[in-house]
Every structure is written in C-alpha cells, then in structure tokens.
Amino acid sequence: MSFVNGYCHAITQINRWFAILASLLVFVMVAAISYEVVARYFFDAPTVWALELSTLLLGPYFMLAGPYILHTAGHVNVDILYGKLSPRVAAMVDAGIYPIIGLISCVLIYQSIPVAMNSIESGETSFSSWNPAIWPVKTLIPIAFSLLLLQAIAEMLVAIQRVGHRAEHQGEGRA
Image (cartoon, rainbow, N blue to C red; front, side, top):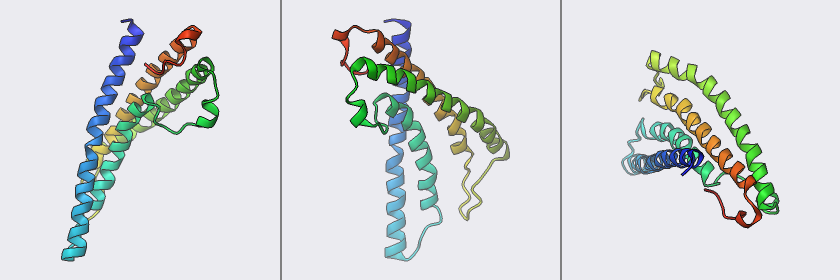
C-alpha cells in the first residue's frame, strides 16, 4: 500500500471511529429530551438541564461526524449537475473543491483555538440555572476542524489519483 493510500485509509478510519462515537450521543440526547417530556407533562416538574444538555451534545455530534460524512459524500451536492459529469471531470471538480474545504478548515482552526484556550483557562460555564461547563464543547471545535482538514486532504489525494486513472478505472467510486 502506498503512503498516500495508507494516509487516506488511516485518516478515514480515525474519522469513522469519531463518527461512531459521536453517533452514540444521539441516544443521550433522546433520553434527556424524553425524560424532560415525561417530567414536564406527566409530573409538572420540568428539568433545568435536559434541553441545555441536548443542545451542548448536538454540537459535538454534528462536528465530529462531519469529517467522515465528507468521505462518504453525505454532504449536500448538486447531483443534477455533478451526476452528468464524466468520472474524470467529476474527479477534477473534487480535486478543486477539497482544497477550498481545507482552506476554510484552516481559517476556522486558526480562529477557534484562541476561543477554546480562553474557555479552558476561564473554566467557562453556560451561566444558566444548571450552569454546566462548556469549555469541553468549545475545545472540540478546533479538534473537529482539524479532523475535517485531514479528511479533506485525504479526499483530495484520492481525487487526484482518480484524475490520473485511465478510462477503464473510472466510475469505481471512492477509496
């Protein structure tokens, strides 16, 4: 296996595991909201934490699943146009789009690191009546965008390989 293929496989597997772990957060969110509904409507005793917990977990769920979704092409795409492209032209489009995703990721990493550091140093909380720590969630922002950057690099390398393949190898899908 070449270095490029090994890198792409390793990054994709790391992001796959983060996506699986993040997907488990759905069960916690559903349980919290279900508990809130029962407590509020059956016992007239609403919680101060259920909605806020679900909101705090939605961010990591979304951000940590995103890099793997980039690999599976699960993001929004204009299929009506993209589907009409030849495999080679589609690979060229991909090879041009992934650097843009990488650039945006770099900007967001650069901007979010000071926010995360400040949040950690201050022990930031939500200042609600429940008042949970929110610095762990803010710390995940640069981590998630770093994972997205690494996955965008991997996908760009795969797209470049697809551009270079001969016609009989086109249409085999993503690595």
